[in-house]
Each structure stands twice: as structure tokens, then as C-alpha cells.
Image 1 (cartoon, helix red, strand yellow):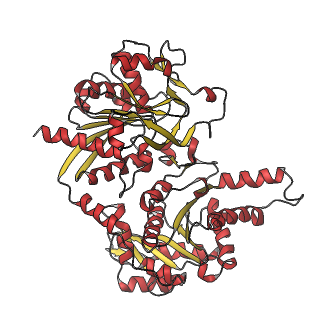
Image 2 (cartoon, helix red, strand yellow):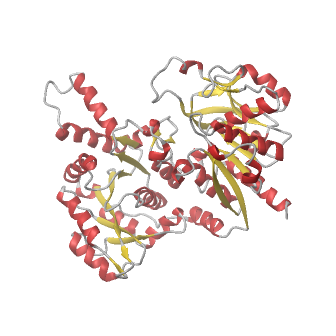
Length: 538
């Protein structure tokens, strides 16, 4: 069987959920026995999201191979349970960078370099790249932005060319669009969808399936009208209504027969019906919790929910594993201080101090750590959260009042957190960190070892600064134990306080590997610890 290529575009408005539709379709095809992956093409000029402000773009997701990517790749991995890579996220910046570099090297033999064919050829090369590995039966490509955007046009043009270059049974186009409901008229309106599809068709791409985001059920008459005016086959207009959980969407798409349409169009015979039993069991636990707990997420980007998307989703997974609904309360660390921390966090069953960069809000994070440590509330720190746990312990237990990270205070007398030696000579901000998966050895007799049930693990990283090993002996003598180390460089990966009911912090980002069917073990145990606090108070 030839590799099949599916393209998902969007129209009318952004944030309609192209990534969720792509991931849901991928899940359905995977559940039928196909090998599927998803890639995201983003129209912005940044090489990758690594230097983007989380307020601008949400979470920067990190893959196993160290690529800093769009947060949609997190959705892809959580739905499929299959790792993505550098090749799964391509930006306009990366495309132009490649073409301009090749031009400087003389690869075009003095020809005038143009958007067509040079830029579009590079886009097509990358669109087909994963398919040439032989690892996948189906490649789903999500095209970022909205049809009609100036910056998206080269991607649409590349799609147009592929639509005619690939065999008809190897190419499929899905267009996601909005059907707004006008409350005053009590009517769904199809004109925005018609104009969106017409814009796509005017650029030479003819969608095979139209998926309509809608608040109300689409009547058969409305579906026929859209099919007629948008020149798609009857029955190839389907609805995507708001779901109570994003993990319900694959079932909604199955009910709309999306996977059946795709399999027919791509001429893939003899496939079994999709087996979604694992996801169904997860949803059943998620929908019928026996308890509810309150957990504080203390961070500096809490105003945008997508800034900590993987952490939020990890709590969903871990909550279901404990048959418990987790209410995550996002607390702006800038607003926390020693005088109000008990009032703000006192009713929480657990406290997570989140990752981040820069000095803003650090003192609030330290106040949150101190409150959790002294009051016995279950605590979990991630990356910068671990570093602030180390700083707090140094200041308030070891008595080093000036202890700090050199990121915040370069001239501190006790640099308990310091930059990695190999990074000190680098000046570029992109791709200068410890990125991607690294091994970690968990010490026997520790909470971390008990949580994972094994001594050797691999987790993903995104940071420059490290625990300063010069102070390790002093910390351990005072009660902050190192329970996980990187075996290659003896770097501290996990710290914990054995005398505390539950106090653990990691330099790595465990949230990046959590899925509904394989919830991350630290999150599962953290939620259980929070649940124990709830039950003990009753």
C-alpha cells in the first residue's frame, strides 16, 4: 500500500480545533490497525516556538529528539501514544532558512529563487518526508492558520500541486470551518463556510470532506445545502459539536463516519472496525469520579490556559487513574508573598510549582514552596519549580539567606542553581538548552524509585540551569535528598524530602509523556497524595 496523505485546513476563524480533529481522525485510523503520524506546518517566520513568549503561542512542546515545537504535537502524542520528532513540526521560517542557505551554497546554479517553485518545492519535500521512511501508512498534515491568510498561501499552493501530483487515492483534503449560530435569528448560517471553501477552491484545492464546528445540530437540509454550494459529495459534510472532553471527539467523529469516508476515499481495503476500548475505559473513569480535589498550579503564565497545556492534561489523566476529578486552580506567582500565601493556598490539597524562565514571579514560587514544605501539603515542582524548591530549602533550612539561581542573581554568594558549564559561552537563545530525552537513574529506597517502579527512566528536558553539585552534600545532610541523577554527567534530576508526606521535584518535564491510557506516574501519585489529604480531613 502506498503512503496516504491527508491534509487538514481551517477557515472562517482560528482556534476551531484543527489539531483535535486531526488527532481524532489519526486515533480512529490507528485503532483500525494503521500506522499513523501527524505533522504541523505553521505559517510564522520563527524557526521554531522555542523563543516565543507563552502568552503569544502557548506552551512550547518538546519532543524526544529535542525539538521545540507547537503545542499541537502534544495533542498528537497524547491521542496516539506515538512519539513525534523534529520532522513533525515545520515553520515558514525553517522553510525559508533552508532555501536561503541552499541559495548561498550555490545549489540553484544562479537561477532566480522564487516562492514558486523553490519555496513550494521545499514545502512539498517536507510534507512527503515522513512518508518516505516507510514507518507509516498514513501521514496527516495540519496546516496552521486560516485559509485566506497571506502567510498560509505557499502551503496551500504546495497542497494544490500535490493534489495533482499524487495518485488520486493517495490524497485527501479535509476543511474545518465554522457554522455560526445567530441567536437573534435563531438560525445557523452557512455563508461563512461557503466563502471559506470558495477561497480554498480559488487557490486550486478542492476539499473532499467538510467538518463544521457548530453549537447546534446540523439538519440534513443544511448538510445538503453546504455540500451543494461547496461542491463536495453528499454525505461528506459532517458536524463537530463542542464535546465535554477533547478525548470524546474521536467517538463523535466515528459517529459521523469520518474514518469510513477517509478509508473509502483512500482505497484502503479490509480494515477492522476501530478498537477504542482503552480510550473508552479512560473516559468512563473521567466522567464518573468518586472524589474531587483542589490543586494549585503556581506559575507566571497562568492567564493563558494553553501556557501549561501538558500539565493540565496530565492532571486529567492522573485524575481519571485515581477516579478523582482534579480542579486545577491557576495562581499567578507574582501575586504570592509570605503574608498572603497561607490564605491563597491554605485550602488546597496539593501544590504544583510550574516551569518557566526569567526572574518574574520567582519569590512567589519560593513562598509557595515554603508553605507546602512547612504545612505538609503535597508538593510537586517541575524544572524551575524544582530549582525554586532548592533555593527555598537553602534559604530557610540551611540558613543561606542569599541563596539563589544565577539566572536571577548572577553574583549570589550561594549559587545553588547555576548554568550548565557548556552553555556559559553560548550567546544564541535558540537551541542552546538541554533539550529532549535524557536518562535518569533513580536511587533505591526513594519516593521516586517507588513511584516509577524501576531504577532507570528517560524523561524530557528544556532548561539551561542545573542543581549545583558543590552543595549536594550540605543539602542531603539537612534532609533534602537527591533521588535521581543523570548517569552520564552526574546531574541532579530529582530531589525529595523523605520526612514530608509528599515532596518531590524534578528537573525534567514529566508532563510531556502523559497520555490518557498511560498517565504519568508522578502525577498519578501526586493526585493520590492530594486525595489522601482530602479523605483524612473528612
